[in-house]
Length: 312
Ligand code: RIB
Ligand code: CA
Image (cartoon, rainbow, N blue to C red; front, top):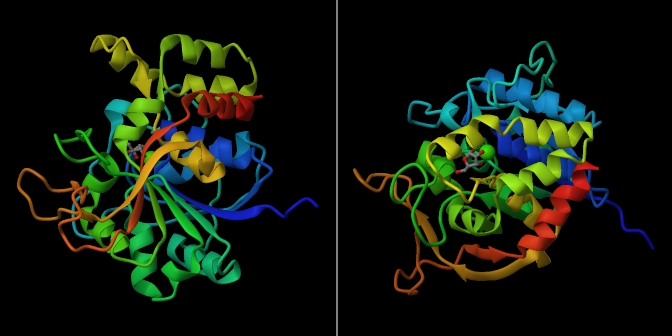
């Protein structure tokens, strides 16, 4: 008997890696993306909304895109044009204007999806957690209604990517991340370290995807140009890390995880040097209940096959 597709909401700051993650979800018959919620992060909220709408369209979907928060809960927005380009999708001249988002705000869409799919909804967060934190604050039942949350964010071990200890999604809005990590959400955390290990694409990897020649392959590889050029300039021969699709792959196929542990994870919100750090209690000394399945490694071969399959 064919099981019905699993309902999913993707919270995103479409950016160049978010777009690849969205394509994986939108092209996978095992899930039904019931909403895409947009939040500022890699680029401004208006850009994120248009980028999400463009990506949904090129993936052949009509799923609604719901505008969310234009800035973090307390802090000023910091974006990442150096990775994603000024428009958030690699500055390759895509027609990223004039598409119409849903009139329903992101937080309302999140709350409605959790109610309508109580106990079934899979929430994938690929961005600063501002929208998700606001949903947790708005409805005490939200977190417990979500079946599981796969979060690209933080670091399970090892350095950050914005500061020595902080990863971008958490660093942009640490207060939101702290609220989400204190909620009842059943979180699988796919940190920057896991993505560096198993979601780094060499130039050969990218070329082998580009030569598939499909519109999705051309789009998903083409938008990486800013990041690729930066890697070449910086002499990073290993290539570029494209993190969000790994978190999405974990959501789609949890058995892709090859190493993980259930650990207590908190977020530093006050440190001068450490703001945005995910503090992972590897020693079990904080008394903090384990609140995350922290992913350390995944099956890279299967991940690359999933990406390839989504582009065909
Ligand atoms: O640190 C990587 C994360 O920050 C990814 O989600 C990327 O899209 C940016 O949002
Ligand atoms: Ca992202």
